[in-house]
Amino acid sequence: MNPSELRKILYEGERIVLGTCVVSPSTKWPGLIADCGLDFVFIDTEHIALNRETVSWMCRTYTSMGLPPLVRIPTQDPDDATVVLDDGAAGVIIPYVEQPEVVRSMVGASKMRPLKGRRLREALNGEDLDPELRTYIENHNDGHILLTNIESVPAMENLDMILAEKGLDCVLIGPHDLSTSLGVPEQYDHPRFLEACALILGKARAAGIGAGIHHWLPPQKQMQFVEMGANLLIHKADAIFVSEGLGNEVSQLRDLLGQESPYSQSGNVTI
Image (tube, rainbow, N blue to C red; front, side, top):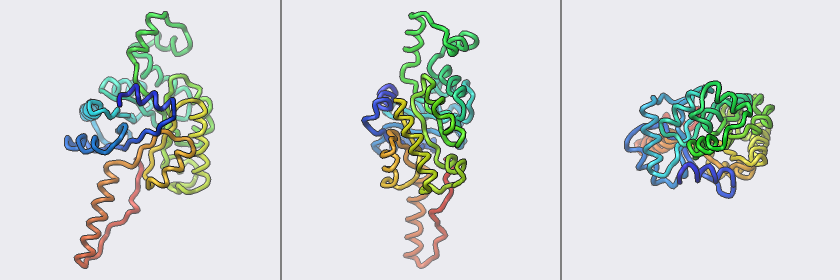
């Protein structure tokens, strides 16, 4: 799948696209990930310590394998969005957005480059571009995907205005931060959390753009988000799979050896 195909699917909503969070920059990883049947990968630079060269290597490697990389940047700075796109990202995820103006500035960084400075500000404010320049800009940025994290009560309050920003392709729920903002931290079965998810996902699909969530619940429980309207699922992370798999089997070995196991599955997940 290429970035343009992924973006088209997000708008059409007829198919659910699946990805996972990849935090390991090991050269062994891409070949393993590519055999897992995913549609894309999520690379997080907000919570994970990855430098620019490493992120670029990961982006270009996964792209060559048909897995468009969606990169969450650590700030709401448009320059950070431009950097990861220059380095090979298919899409940019803006963290913790609460105001439509943030989305607008990111549209400029992801959908209107190489316009910059005053010329870009004028275009974002509605000034018409001549047809030749507009065609060039659209072709230059074709395939760039813009996603925004919706993960707080203020973001929900401003959701209609955020969704009205032309150029936004998908909203992505961050469950940990959203549940915390709602006052029910990590209570993912709480009615308040589920009602919020249904509101966000439903409004995004009604606006004609993609609706996604990154969660670490078992697959059966993630189907509830699909029923709410999600057409993009980021399932767990490579680090979680390693922790769960290794922890479970070491625990089994200790049981067989008659040893007490310190392993617990209640580890904190904040990706």
